[in-house]
Image (cartoon, rainbow, N blue to C red; front, side, top):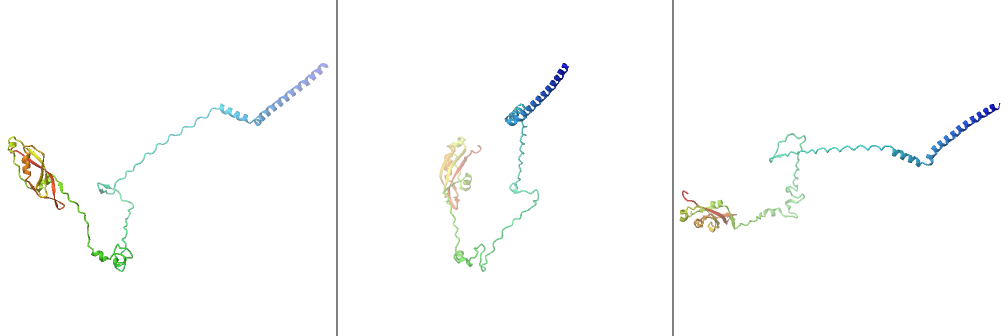
Length: 252
């Protein structure tokens, strides 16, 4: 009987211990859940710290793709403009233009109607004959026209070529071939510088080039040459020229 009482009391104590343990477990679970809920609300910085840790632990995002290369610029189109002139003349058109622009000239001003006495190009409103406040037309018409022509000063001496001076020659005396030069078989040209006076006579003579044995004979003959006067602007002038005398042996 005693044993039965002990077994019944032991069973009661065992059932009550299980209830207490379950109750304590429920209380601790509720406390833990409350802590998890209240901590983020009381300490919000812990959430941002947690987010930073998550961001740091996550792999960085891939870099953005490279931009596409710039497109190459289009080549410039050079338009060739064809000239309308070909060798100083207008070229034949290759096509008929769609629109032809007409050129309209301005009409000339109407003549003055001052009682039949107006002049084309006169001042409108002028009096007949232009005598009021101006110069009488009869006086202007009776004045002789004077043309002031500037007279160009004529030079006293001009230089001409040997061909021009030969065309003015009217009296040519052939030089005498020196005997010593002929015996020595010497021939050639003698070039002289001469000034022909206004009357056509040789005034000044100088040797430019020539053999010493031929030059005196050439100068003696040229001094007696006579030319026609050379006129410039209607006035005779002195002429500076070059004279060539040739000495050639017969059969040489």
